[in-house]
Length: 251
Image (cartoon, rainbow, N blue to C red; front, side):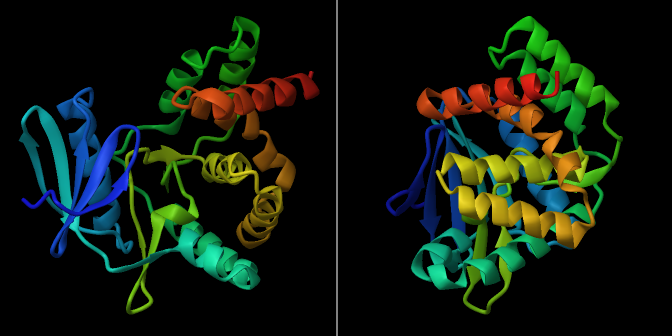
């Protein structure tokens, strides 16, 4: 493997390109179970018929685990939206269509959304009363088994040179209620301080999916609390305050 060309650095991983391969190397604190689960999620998404880079290998080197996938030459949808802001609505249309295509699939072997959300809310740092309110809300929501990406945002969509959109980074994938996925996407836009795009996205998602906006909003505090468990600094503060405010508005 050639680890000379770094193409992205995250808090918990470094991503390299080696010819036609993309190598995601995880930090030492990532367990083999975490990495194998992500590779499994990616493989299941690919086998469902979605355009997803194929997993080629999972390996361990010097105590660090890595996933090797095919490398997709192209630009992220996030890059394109930055380069061509006048095409924001056009790109959002494509973005929402892709997300709905994901939600049209099912992968019965994936983990369940409610289990993942309940675990993350438990570690959110919210007070016991607010945590109980969110656990209760999750239990009251309709139970679906749709494929959910779990971190669907424009930086995880690569438009290849042929124009094919590929969906990457399946570490948070689960099966469950599609509106929770939309809530996470909305909050990701908000974390980028882009309220216009966040609100336009929700409008499009609800229109195209035939979902009532108030129903998606019921997932907002659940998603905010769950997302806060892995965030820090200002992002964590924003998500916790958002969750607390949303919970109290319903009381």
